[in-house]
Length: 414
RNA sequence: GUGGCUGUAGCUCAGUUGGUUAGAGCAUCGGCUUGUGGUGCCGAGGGUCGUGGGUUCAAAUCCCAUCAGCCACCCCA
Image 1: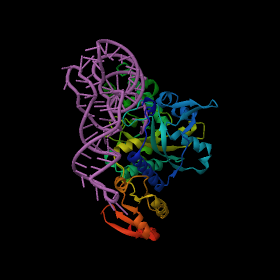
Image 2: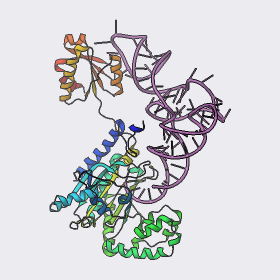
Image 3: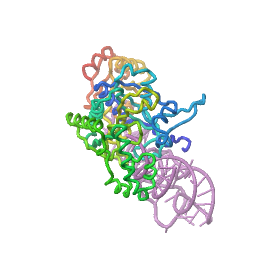
Image 4: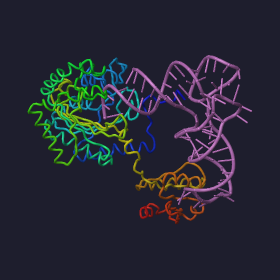
């Protein structure tokens, strides 16, 4: 069996799981469209620099989580660990600055070489939303409103809460960073080992630490909130006012931070307590510095991504699929007319299934298992008279229908 | 990448201090019912006990390694 094992952290998505997966993606796509987002899809892999340069050479995603390999031409290629960088690249490659502002929706697999656990896979799926070219808070509000709409539509809104923070503009953050480091200097030796490294790489991230000692130290640390310049303060207030106006509940979480330099202003996460350690279901933020960092013209952007598998775990069960009508030929001579009836009904818009073998009893049992609403039995007696037996699988009642006008007849009944 | 726990039929699990042919429920298949499902009754198939090595007269059971899963950390959807 070892040879037939799927690669660690990958998963086949089958049957009910797949229906649920598709339902989530399709509902999200439909609502995004309703909010004026257009669906697009960047490639699943890019030149490695697209991600290494945008995510930062020191981030964990780059240093240990990317699926990177050389292609036959010797170029370094990486399976996308997220959507944003690829979409930003596409924006610049296609000269879309001409058409900005743009609102994109995307969905598909992403890859991270992490140790798998519940709610964490090496290949997983995201739905993703980005607004490019809008500097104002309207975009932040819009993007969060869409997220809330989707979560509500999927029925998980009650299990999720919105946490929100501002990272300020680069000026505010730079100034604050100094203040924070000053505060931390005297605690350096009391911090956990992880947090000592964070001090050098991303001091803000220490707020995220789950270490008790770190948390104690951070509980009285100065907050970015109190060191925002006017621009940043006003921007954040606008976002909050906009959410209030839409009746979207949130919780300002001053400890919510982001590691990467190109982030600014709004950062948010929809979190749940129902998924264990992986509480984040949907997360995003503003990345005004990204395009410039990639070598393009400075273009503001904001977006989020949600994990489809995590959403699936929250939903649990998929809505029922469409119920088929099952065509059952009895004997070889019924085969051709049965396939013809199935063909005509399918072209008329019915969902028709037809098995491959078995006696009537077995075929009925399978039809029942497939949740068929009705069954069309074609036996030799019926064929001789040009009719078929239509059995309602709900009531068990049967009636003969003329094969010649079967499409019309079924249109009336189903 | 680090630490802890786990690994018996397709699924959920039992297996007594190591001791003959490893069990149950569900699912599958066949029959009761030559062309009638969902509930019933009878029966059948299906397991290199994750994999490899070791200890022992004897290993599903003990030891080591490895792979995978779960939980936590790191990080993140």
